Amino acid sequence: MVRLIAFDVEGTLVKARSSWVELHKKFGTWEKGKEYAELFFAGKIDYAEWAELDASLWIGRKKGEILEWADSVEYNDYAFELVEFLRENGFKVVLLSSGLMCLAGRVARELKADYVYANELIFENGRVAGVIPRVDFEGKGAILRRLKEELKPELTIAVGDGFNDLSMFREADVAIAINPHEGVEGDHVVESLREVREIIEGLIGGR
Image 1 (cartoon, one colour):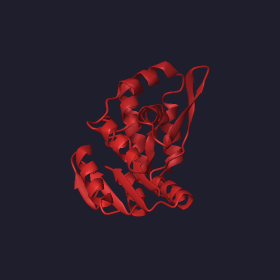
Image 2: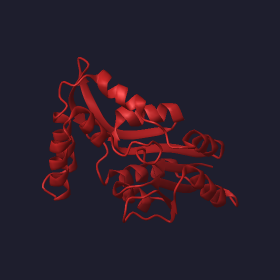
Image 3: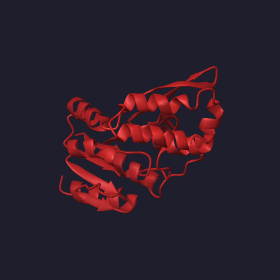
Image 4: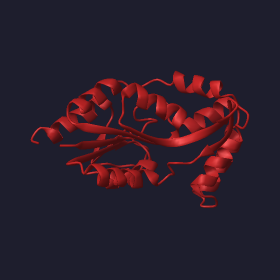
């Protein structure tokens, strides 16, 4: 018996809302980054172009600076306890982030997730040299669908907060929106990871 749960990372498991935005602010590139975001949401560039333009603003930045930021990001309350509960109840845990692997990878290691997908900065000689865009704005649903085909879970749950989580919400049996952005809806809307556990306990109680 396999169960599957997919989490967004930023704003869901950790307090940072966007690794892209946080790094823009750290490096003083946010004004240009906002221009690129507007181009994407206006349909003038695709996600890969947006990621490449964003990362181009950080060319030459030290890997250590970026990892220092990623290591400073705090977890939302009850993240560790929730994932431990899920593992004890037969869930495979997947992290799906359209943010950056420097943060998502750390979270996956520390929470002992089974799978992690995120966009990956390229480093050469310890400095940013580009990006590999692996999870685009609509890409979470396709990744979750592939995992469902592979694992054939009896139950699939998705937990997230943003518009880029809606594609994985559509693939899940149950979608849980946690402190969602305006206009984002799930089967359940909660304010904390403790409430996520309560919902899941209700779902698996009779299984």
